[in-house]
Image 1 (cartoon, rainbow, N blue to C red):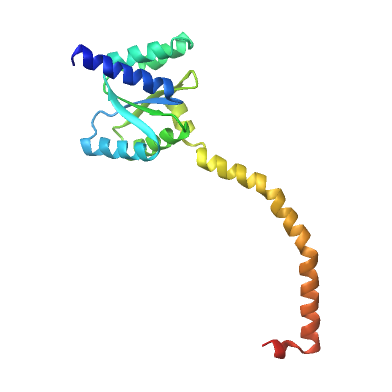
Image 2: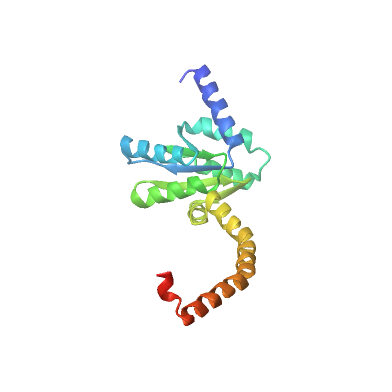
Length: 184
């Protein structure tokens, strides 16, 4: 890479790390190009970015972006940027990339997650796996909507029940009088 190309790549990495809510590093050694392409497609569908990075540029970008973070956590995250590294970032959803990566890792034993940077702290591979088991953004919104609408739904049922009882009583009385054959 020429110096100008390196600077463009560094600026891109810095921009990605600044805007990301989560950055996950993974080792893709031993995977075919088709498998890596499949993973990238899945990540893109989940609203994430995935890029194979030059380690020295990635370390430099992380150091610039996370200079105000805890140095112990920053150094642990920098240790994950060794060997072939795929960096996955997500601006919108913290859980989405972890779910995709965990699913892919189960299907491909050569793929492994090294660690992540989340909300100013380092998360190890086990922590990333734990994150992948949490409900995602859309699932959380659905549960919240269900909790919010449940009292209103119950209130409507309670208010409509006396009317339903009256209708059932009238229907039972009509059947008793022999009006069943007229209705059929």
